[in-house]
Amino acid sequence: MRVAVVGAGQTKFDEHWEKSLRDLSTEAGALALKDARIDGKHIQSLYIGNMSAGRFIGQEHLAALAVDQAGLIPIPATRCEAACASSALAFREAYFSILSGQYDIVMAAGSEKMTDLKGTDAIATLMGAGDQEWESAIGLTFVSLYALMARRHMEKYGTTREQMAMVSVNNHRNGALNELAQFPKEITIEQVLKSPLISDPLRLLDCSPITDGATAVILVSERVAKRFENPIWILGSGQASDTLALHHRKSLTELLSTKVASKKAYEQAGLKPKDIDIAEVHDCFSINEIIAIEDLGFCEKGKGGKFVEDGKIARDAEKPINPTGGLKSIGHPVGATGIRQISDIVKQLRGDYGKLQVNGAKIGLALNIGGSGATGVVNIFGRDKPK
Amino acid sequence: MPYKSSVPLFWRLKKSKYNLIGTKCNTCDKVFFPKRNLCPNCRRRGNLDDFQFSGKGKIVSHTIIRVPPEGFEKYAPYAAAIIELDEGARISGQIVGDISKVETGKPVRAVFRKIYEDGSGGLIHYGMKWEMAE
Image (cartoon, rainbow over the protein chains, first blue to last red):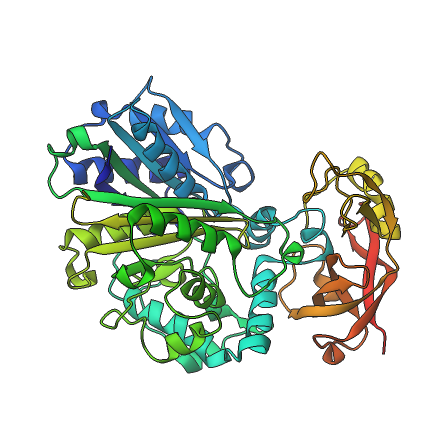
């Protein structure tokens, strides 16, 4: 049994003062249905990723709310949570629900409304992805967890401040072409290096922003896929877990969850890192893209900074990474990001993604990470139906 | 600010927070901080007892937090680190004293300090911070 993605939708990622979580979720779902050219009545089940609506807007029981707002009562609705990897989990659950033979047409979605809270409360809410008793309680923030990784990576492998800045520059250069991005503008290395220090060595422009947004995709079984134009096939899917607290890890310079999840996905797909044409990679902080490039096997451990410096991640280079802008430029509504990445890979592999199109992309990978890496999810997609 | 808790959470954790008591597995000899109910290596074959850490360790990685979370404003900028305790477990903590002296590999020791307050009139949270041992 094979499963394909036949529709993808994303709201503008932004600070949406005029729209609520329910507005954004409904909009993304409708865009995905329109893209797939089917009516909502064909959706048999909904899986929605969301990190923390309970703290961001005081609303739980989101999946039923989404089905209610979409006029899809009484289909089953399930919410998935793994911090910033919530919607990649929703995607996998949707995938498995079709593999099980239970359904033929399922929607996977993701949403987060972060700006209804003031900034400091949003930051405290995000810290719920870490260890509340032993990390948050001593004054750590999410950027400081990644700063601890960055420091170690710099000391151990000689990764430079400039190389990390180049990640942000690359992603903003790509995002400048993306109409749905929160910050569609180019930045320079100097701007990154002069932006305010948040948690040494990371600066403001190493960090992804706080964002509102929603995303959705439509998954279908092989049996019904022939009714759709241009299905994009799931070739492999892996997920792995690690310690919730960063300090419990043996290594601060790799994410075990990325390594294990990608190994599984590569094995299922029968592919190697060199076969990947484009990748959407979880750049919540610039250092994480460098670590991810290594852990996904695109280069040797410790050489990720050099890989970036050598220009290999540019949209016209050997391994285009985040060719639509990444979390840095597009924005990071945490529960929506995983499916945003998948939606972008799907649009790239169809080959008609306008200004954002990477020519000749046939195989794409999406890496979504929860917290400081306690959850890692890798999905690999292909334009051609696998045998 | 960390999740605003009432007394029970901190009551429950006071042994660990105030005295650095973790657990040791008598089956595999590994030590854990904070306490665990199950040895992650041995699982059901594990046999855990309380274990007192000495409060000495060394810095594995460090940062200076300049944009603090709510409740920590008056301490910023402050240094935070991952510390490997001499007995083997790792912990996150703030480093007190001259933050320009903080370096990877340097020895530190635990000191009992106020960590933060739940606003004016709220709970005052105490625990361990760390000072450079040299």
